Image (cartoon, one colour):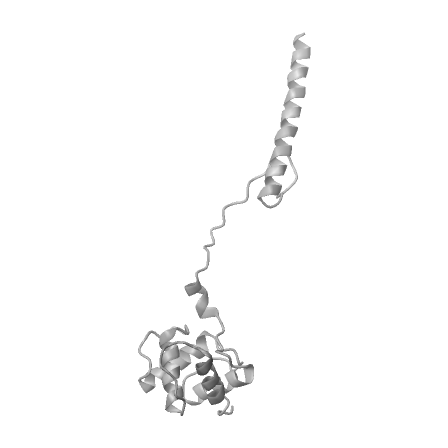
Length: 161
């Protein structure tokens, strides 16, 4: 009888192990995938990556303000020709291009914020002041609306690389 009892417990142990493995498999698939086959698994480690904020991503963004590549290249060439390196002349107004623009606007007295390459209201105001210097009649409100974009388009098209 004792032997039968041991057999019962061994069989029960195998059934429980299978049930645990099955439950573990279901849990793993629910969590997002099974790391490996076997009788056990480890839950995926918590990601230490933080959620990116708009502020953290903004400097990496390309902000052409309605300019196509040719017009944006012309703007980059203007900045370069005025002594403010926008980086590669590629028609993509990214952080380096906007840092160069902010430095350029600063030399004109139109910009007095941090040189960070982020196209915020102060950068837009400086651009609006600069465009007004060249014949535009824009409200200096820091909003890159349709009129500001249209004037920027027209102005950027006047400079050749």
